[in-house]
Length: 331
Image: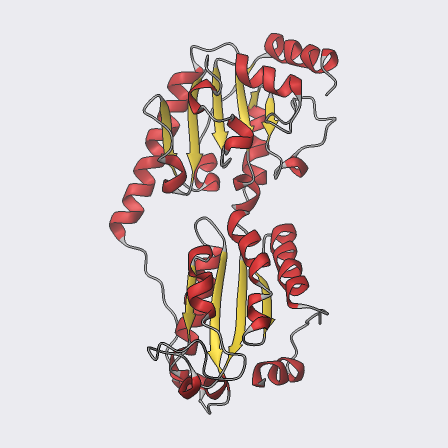
């Protein structure tokens, strides 16, 4: 495969794995740990299908990973023939991974490689992050091109989209400021979106100003140490009893980049934090759509939202009560 030969001759640092599934999971782990783009490269057919598990993991965990697979020559591809396969070890990998990627394409014109690679990298690393997949047929890999003479990928943000994002943040910030005035038992539910958007500093700045209990999801465990005076545990079905009690008795909860799946909320969303004014900030509008109108839904990047949010307050009596709950409920 020309891709392997080129990689071996390049200055890129790479790790050879014994199996494509291991390669895909390693790339997913790299993307998760570093919050940078992981890359997995496989051959065609079973080499590509072996990597699907890692692709699914990246899709479900919002991890930026670029998958590059080899493919048979374009003249040997199934196309519209109706045959099960034509080329040696051929498979239509793009149709398989399309539902679990943000972007998936087979390269059919070597002169569009910069555009397609740029689009794939942009998709994987922007918005709600996730996997992208580029499939490159053998004859496309072998094509002679002049890199300086082929078009680059460009992304120009739509002014209307930028305006809507700005307005969403303004409305969300106003809702938080209005709600926090009249509460005595607030809590912040910190999700992996804080880490994914590189907003740790802004989150810690908020903690310094707003001294209230902090709850985390399973994926954001490393955000705070257990010894942090504001940390009050991890609620959910596989969480801690005290954290669940705090979640269910608070009168205000600000959810930052947490998916709030069934493991977190149980199967009736209406029973989640029933006493609280609920505000959820998420970059994915599809996730926000599951909440009813009793929630304040803010479609925004966590970092952008936290940069705009300027609030303060101390809730020492409530925090002390939460710490007592933790002592009484060890697990």
